[in-house]
Each structure stands twice: as C-alpha cells, then as structure tokens.
Length: 267
Image (cartoon, rainbow, N blue to C red):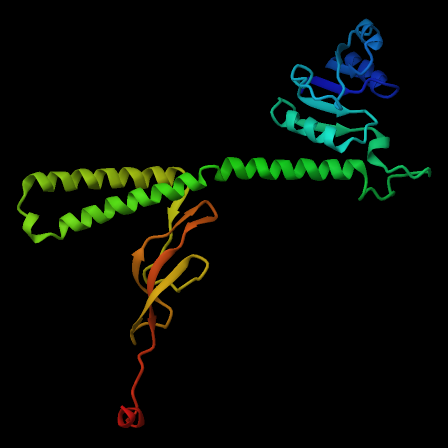
C-alpha cells in the first residue's frame, strides 16, 4: 500500500503529506482552493481540487490504496456521496484524522474518552455501514426473484416428465423414451446450475416438520412414526444461501384417532 490520498491538505494534512513523501509514499493531496494547487505541487504533492459538497466525481483522486480524511466538513449528505464513490474505487482503507469531524461542537476540552455517539462522524460511519450492508445483500441476493421464477420452469419440466412417463399408452414409444432421456439431462443441468449458484433443495422426507422451511398441505395418520414427521414431499422447496426461496409443500404424520365405544354409539 504505497499510494495514499489525503482529503484536505490544510494545517494537518499538508505536513502529513510531506512526511509521507519523505518516507517514500506516493501522495495525492486535495484542496478546495485553486490558489493552493501550485503550493501543493511545489511540495511534489499530486494536487487535486476537491470539494465533497459539490455534486461531482473525483475518480482519479480516489485511485489509491489508502484515503486519509482531514477535512472539517460535517455535511452528512456530502460524506454519503463520498462513501458511494469510495465503494467503487481502489481504496482499501479509510482513516479519519479530523477532530472537528469526530467530536461534536461543544466548546469544551475533548479527550480520547469523550463520547462520540451522536457526532457527524458517527452518523457518517452508520451511513457507510448501511451502504455496505445494502451493497452486499444486492450482490448476494440480486438474483433472488430470477431464481424464484426459474423454479417454476423446473417444476413444469418435472411435471411433464412424470406425466409422459406414467402414461401407459406411451411406454412402447421409442421416440418418447429418447425425449424423456433428454428431459432428464436438462433437469440435471438445471439442478447443477442451481447448486453452483448456492440454490439448494430443502431436505424433507423423514425429517421433523419445520414451519420455517416446510408448509404442511395435509396430515396422514401413521402410528409408525412420530407426529410431525414428513411422510411425503408434494413440491420441493429451496434456499438461496441462507434465505428461503420457497418452502417445501409436505404431508406430515399425525396420531391415529381411535374411536371409543361411546363414540361408536353416538355414530
């Protein structure tokens, strides 16, 4: 990480930039004043005119490994736009060194123990974390609706296969047998694509009913297994990573109702 960008080359940022240059780092520095551009260039700092309150992009300035923020702005909207640009840049680490952005306006002495919960920086950090979470979810689950709709294609394919296979009048048709083989290949390919994209089938048969991933469509009396055991899978369910795409439609076991003599008499 030899490339560093310093946002705000003022009384703190400028000497820091000079010190980093002496250590052998490549340094970019920003200012909001055109007059100071030549001053920074004279110090061999790669100078940029950057004002985060303006609606503009500064991609070249953010093409570094580390971004050091040394500006006094408390404009949360401006910082939110800056965060969005950082997310698409090569920046790997961000360091805040401006105390006026870290601490609230209190006209008092501050120290490392001073609370910073409701400060501009805290709000900016919260905005950044929300943005990261939304970006991550969009990347991981962006194909959620597409995957859900694709399940219907697999369902129809499997229904067509079973319908043809169970038709006694078509069993001796060699062409149809080849057609069924092709359907099997397509089905396996679809399942393979699902697995590669973290779409996994929910286990059902002989499992304990779980309302978080199963939907009971009917109950069947069965004394051989515990009540609530899944006896039949009516329609398979799937997960996309840890998110439920579709619950499994199942039939579950229930206790057999034993009629007493009194009940028989009533009947």
